[in-house]
Image (cartoon, rainbow, N blue to C red; front, side):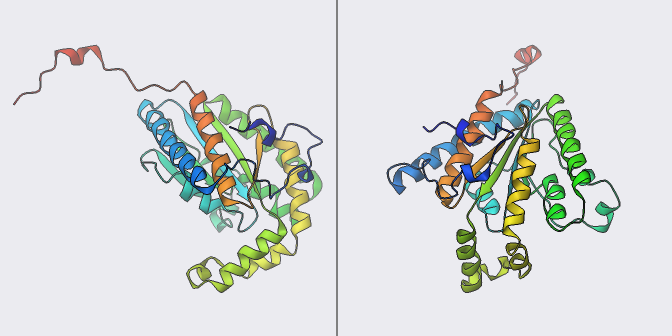
Length: 270
């Protein structure tokens, strides 16, 4: 199995140009092998998540960030296809409401962090507040740097109180996004996914890539690292994130709660 460390953002000199969105090296020799491995991975994730939920000690966030059409929804559907929904929760962060805007930008995010025994998937996240707001000039450079530090402090607090963060940037190329947007226009079953505003954001592609690069440089830490997931290939994406999630769950000291001694005297009557 391919080492996952190569996808981890470790250097302040990190550049997205170091990563090819079309990298498919996580895949096997043929599609059948890919599907067989993915099935085993999802079953194993389900088994570990079941213990996570039953034990009620650890907390996990899988954070998915990426451009429109990068595959955040598809990742959730595929990686958790074998999972019992008990103990798993999806938190999606769209444009903030008036109530959310009346609070600090981390307020709505903190409300969604996992309780003990929960695995929460963030579809987008607090990083929107150093991405779209930076690209559109709604905050200046000084405020953006302050937010990087605030995010680092927030994530440190989460990890110090028992939460494990897995932060994944789903890396697709501009060409791949064009194909996926066109598919949404052409395919009747996908019309509902299309939003004309996506074209406005697409026009700012280079600005977004710079914003992502700067954010990952500033916030990939030992306690909450970023991983760049090549995602032009959906199969490559699903395999990598499944391996990463399973590796993380396997590293946690999970165990089913033991039977209390006083239960030994219990008798179940006819």
